[in-house]
Amino acid sequence: MIHWYHSLYMDDVVAKHPSRCKKRVERRRPWKKNYYAVTLAVNDANLFEIMGTRQLFFRRYRYLDMYILGLAADYKGAVGLLQKMIEDVCRENDSFSPRQYFQKKDFVSKQE
Image (cartoon, rainbow, N blue to C red):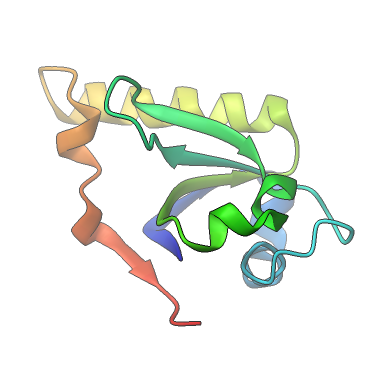
């Protein structure tokens, strides 16, 4: 299931039509448009992951909980979003603790 961060980070392209972009990702239609999502890492050794949404087409991802923090139209935009997220975490907290800043209760999910 896909869970969206309540104040989703978006690049300029996605910010023009956020609901359309989110629907394309939720419906898992990779032939329409490939976006890049910044997600919370599945494994505890990492903080974030940048993944192409074409990967969501695989059956494995239907059974995983994906916590999406940001959505960008290209990889370079996703890296920029990640940089902005880290800057926001550092600005708000004295210590660098993104896992405590982005908690799973702050995400909204659409029931499929």
